[in-house]
Length: 388
Image 1 (cartoon, helix red, strand yellow):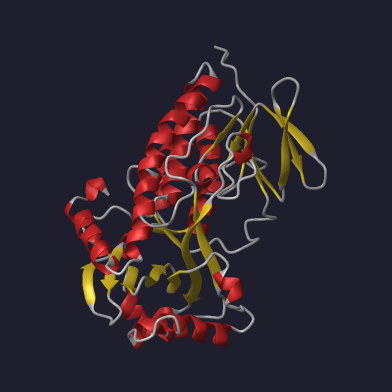
Image 2: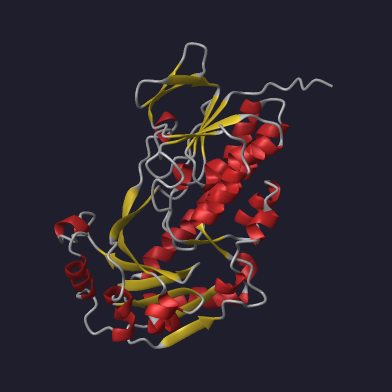
């Protein structure tokens, strides 16, 4: 029997995990979409480090996408550990990486993106397509105007384009605000052979060292790689005003370490032994409870809808479950506009809870008693993992 459902022309702006998950689940259910990604290719830039995918969000979305086996082939269940240190290097909390009751396996961002890309037919993802503006047409559809002057029309535009979304202004005036905390990203390669003390310190999972309203964070990735974040309460322009010059890595690492007087040398090795790639990352967040009045033909998912601090690790998981909910709503609906409204209502409620937790997490970690607060959170999570 011929499918009589009205199928919108769908543009997905942004080819990160959220946008690709949406495209994949739509494709698996016979719905056509096009992903516009501003990067020139999958190799255009570094995709970052490791992600932990939660059972009821990120992993659930991959099951709906029919990609569970592909995910399991690259998931690192052994790297779910967590360690909490004070500034003296004393351990206050430790959770083994391969704990039997843990179900937040790690996966490297490039591996996750490759799984999703490989599941899509050629041509679904359009590379090097930077959206400059979006205009409303007389018939109620939307015209995407790309760098270079090319235009295309669509009935539904989904903003999956991150914190600085070009789609968001169509539905909301909100812009992400600086959280007051800046991360500086560093990394160590071949850590087991070249940096064995750091390897033992980090273990198999995530390390937090907190004190003096600041922190050192590290996470183990695949292939003996460790990512490091130097976390400081600082003015928004701190990185530029303090001349953290990526062209002078040794000098810059010395300046970063100087922010941690009296800290254990084995913790400061995370800075001193890092490689030369140094990237300041001021952290931004949309207001907790951010939402908008539904506008037919436009919606958002992931960071475009609810960017929040990385504390609690919900970002990619929310983006993927947003995508799954929207895809299923669109595929099953007789009225796709009503389906988008229903998706937004569900997404708003879920995101508000997560954003409140992320805001509380980043605020409490970098206080005088941040170590004690974070310790309580970790103990509560271990005691009640289903509530995490």
